[in-house]
Length: 192
Image (cartoon, rainbow, N blue to C red; front, side, top):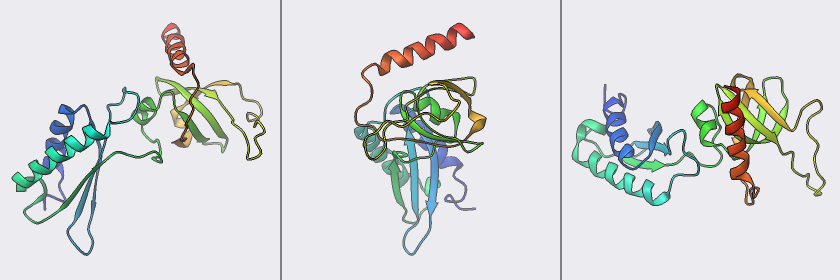
């Protein structure tokens, strides 16, 4: 089995380098095509961190990983390989609990297992449950949209009931965002 097929050594080495930069390895993708194989390392901030990975930090980690791969053939083998270190990007589907924890404060587009479509701000994640504030937004004519019938402004939704979720790009988050997140955390700790 080649180093490209068994990524154990690469995963361990990348983990050490990324940890030193305050990053975590989300996934490794290997693409084989006409030229040299491409190895893509998707990195992010740890699960409880808010915000986005700093691109200068990602670039520093990328250079260090590239040097490490050049020095040690055990990581990716002796043949030329294109190494890319990147972040998940804004259009990543949220699938794991850590993805949701990292997205606290963000506006999400969610579809539940029963087909209900929600647009809501994620205020917190506690015991595999999402604390949300619905923000239906406006239609293309600027008219306010309504919440789905029978739903409250504030919801708790089990992660198991989410069939798909993505972060929406938002240029003007609410001014009281920090307070909303803090209040959601306070409510969760009182209920525990």
